[in-house]
Amino acid sequence: MTEQASVTQTIPAAAASAKTMADLVDSGVEIKVLKQGDMVEGTLISVGKNEVYVDLEGYGVGVVRGRELYDDEATLSALKPGDKIFVSVVEPENKDGIVELSLRQAGQERVWQTLKEKLESKEIIRSKILEANKGGLMVEINNVTGFLPVSQLSLEHYPRVEDGDKNRILSVLQSYVGQLFDVQIITADSGEEKLIVSEKAVFEKEMENRLGSLKIGQVVEGIITGVVDFGAFVKFGDLEGLVHISELAWQRIDNPKDIVKVGQKVTAKVISIDKGRVSLSIKQLQEDPWLEAVKKYQIGQAVKGKISKIMPYGVFVELDKDIQGLAHIAELSHEAVKNAEDFVKLGEEKEFKIISIEPAEHRLGLSLKALIELPPKNIDQPKAGAEQKAEEPALIAKPTPEHEAM
Image 1 (cartoon, one colour):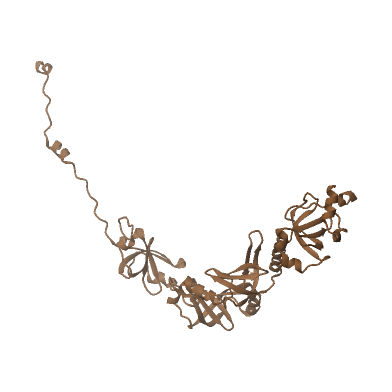
Image 2 (cartoon, helix red, strand yellow):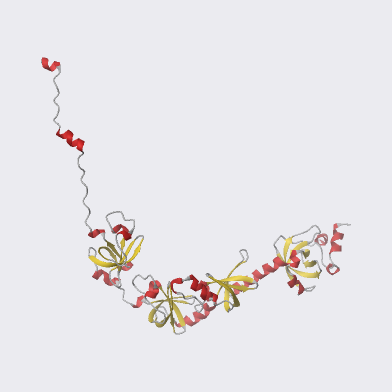
């Protein structure tokens, strides 16, 4: 029996109209070349117990069997001969001249292709929150697990936790499990099987429309709705903005909650509107105390201040409620300083000398050692041996016989 006859007996009667690779070669039809991993569309010829045959127009006949068949029984049960079906090439041509195919791999490729289409169209997808971790939330789209990072949550769902306590953030995120969120796909990478979604992106367009009447420089009145380690959220009207920690006050701030509290009424200035996000400033509506610093403080002046923070590179000194200066570690002593705490203590009041003022940069340099007199230098004393030699009388050379004779 020839190889061609074997192939003909293997293919069911329903596949008689489809041409094998050998038939196509004999007919002189131009053959398209397939390679492993290609995804192609074909027409279902027949569904058997152990094999499924597919007519690949321009390529020949393909077969799905084994694991590639059993892993996708749910898909096959809904198909009938004549239906169009996407398949992936496992082997371009087996010993019978037939293309070995996979429904499973094609299904995965098709899923990712669909996800990429949703990404490009910016489709809004309602997805259920499956679980939470400290970085964000897990969702499922088209049977693919995706990730919704905390940074991509809407203002409504963003966890506003003071001090950035990760356990408390996780607790807030866990309260969302089981809820339905509207999201958009922002990354769909089939190669790395990475699916990332954003809730914030859904509202960006809506927010841009609502923010149409808001202008840079506009002054708004609102209420602090949340305080986090990087700033404070302010609700004004039906909008909300963020006052970054650097825009809360002119002085150096370690913790925003030292400056503002939830429920506090504030007046702020709109300084940025970007992709539906509003940035506000409270300090820009206040007079910059550093502009007055050049009048109040001068280089060379001795001032008293309280040590407010000790860092490896130096100490911050509070001169008044608005102005802090920095004494670099090298300015604490004429000696080499390894640990600032050997010379100053937190909360201690000390006198310093101002050695630099830069109002525009909000910098004021201080020195502790400039007010301390340099220790006297040790004068080298002559060695005992040298003194003894200096006191000894010079030796007189004795005359030689020749001298005596003269």
